[in-house]
Image 1 (cartoon, rainbow, N blue to C red):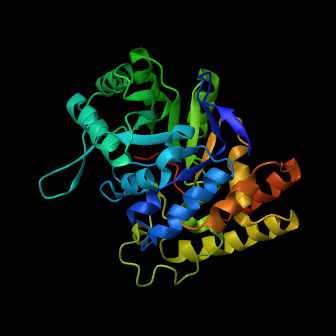
Image 2 (tube, one colour):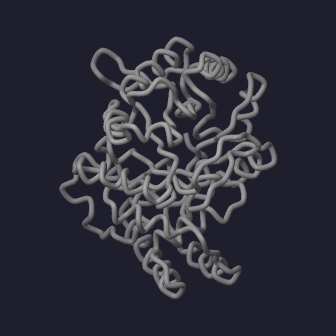
Length: 324
């Protein structure tokens, strides 16, 4: 395993992070025992960062992760999110008020069975409150000792700049993968400013696993990808999906020529960006995390990257509009 610091901070993490969105059920049915086994295997392989959020299954992801970590909690970097609440009917709301953020932290601590969060980040910028006020609330959580470090998620460079006067921010968690390179400018800003980047969606929500087929979402009513437009890109919609599956097959050829799996190629590409600290990968099974950690310890040549760039020019459904 390789490890990097978050920008100029003392927070150091494995370059592979364990994403737990899947634990909440948003990717269809899961077997909890298999996911827990994958978490334990990740720990054995040197993965030290685990990312979750109250939004993942209305707190279920946090609960499962908290139970799975047990006494190992002290050995890892625990990341969760704030700025999320629910109305009386159970509908999720984005709420960046100080009261909502601090109350949300208390709920997360209880579900995660811990008394502090290593890295607390606001889930997205459109939380109905001025960003400087959101930033102050996060810093209050840090000053209280409930969070060791704070950061943001899905913030552009301009939005992040609004937060910096409130105090130190060590991370911006953004979508970044071969199909989605819209935030390159923000990654550059973070690198120059000494702020770490967590890249979520490194495997493009399953597309870059190489396991999806045109019938993968049939009968999966609870799978959020059925909408076809993850984070503003129509990658899974109609003919776009079929074309992108062909792109994936061509990327597999590149991976095979290097003696690597497609997920290893995709994650290695993300980590080749010097501004990226952690590539988050969602895992359901031990075999998946074992494969993902094979993304570290080697480098692609410039020629390999040019081959990949040429292939990606055939991708469909991409958008230049940032999300959200």
